[in-house]
Length: 389
Ligand SMILES: *Cc1c(COP(=O)(O)O)cnc(C)c1O
Image 1 (tube, protein in one colour):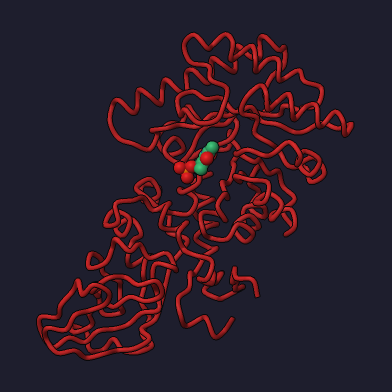
Image 2 (cartoon, rainbow, N blue to C red):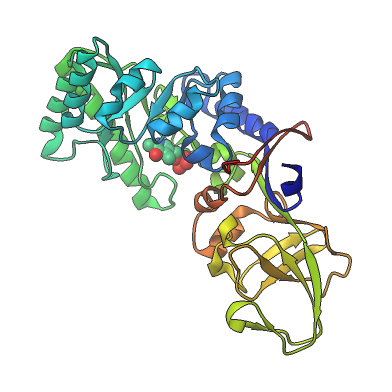
């Protein structure tokens, strides 16, 4: 592990994570619980470490996207409730029950399958009903003419003998976007969700203990969406305008080092395709960071990485394993100098906007060959390399 450390690595600041968590809970207030969204390896930050911090701090639930992600947590000391937001094949119901994992139920057919399988095992599967209120992805569709049939179905599912329906949830499509229209859309989604809950409770004669819908945008902007638990993802990791609004800090800093410095005369073509040609004597740094590490190739010639002396522009095409930056203006930056790709000095938001994407995609793109280095109180407490060694 030591040998790889001076290449490219992601520092995961667990103090920032804990601080962000506390600030979000303060913002939300003590009436609502907290679901930590740790799908996609906790947005690239490492699901095990992130979940341990959340478990220790008293979060109420974790959410992942698949049974594999849920099992990873169970195999690594996470005993708190875990909800799978995505699809799980019915053959896996025995494992869900054995490891006390909660499954989202997106439709009546799935519910029937899950219930039958659980009954065969003489057990009940813990479930949260997923309602589609306007995201148009998974969930019982209850809009317009479908309100009656949708709520009938939900009520029926609540009574299935193989299911223990603990909760109900929905997901907002535009709660994080500005404008009156998005506000209206979100209000409508919330209204519909509350009506569906009311109707399904009336029809089934039961009540849902855990109602949740507030993703990042809703957690910051719409207090009436909090219900029993909030469910923010990107906010917890400290990225985006909402994180800044709450004074949260980025949890990941992606770093690399200058591996070589080369001097070129004017008119030298740099990298594949020669898309950059030097226009003066140029001092070029080679960095061991390329698109296989998660650097978007579309940023070739369009972005600058942060050296200790300021930003150094990327020159020429980004390669699989390397890229080149112009160090002509900063002679102090030399072989071995540390470069911040994104983090506190070089915000990931800027890199995302240069790449025409969102911070989510950039942190999820940090690839498995980039070691994660976990920091607490300024000290390295663990290192993790996701390669099979
Ligand atoms: C990913 C996800 C979240 C978290 O979304 P953020 O925008 O990161 O807050 C919440 N709920 C569901 C169902 C999700 O899939």
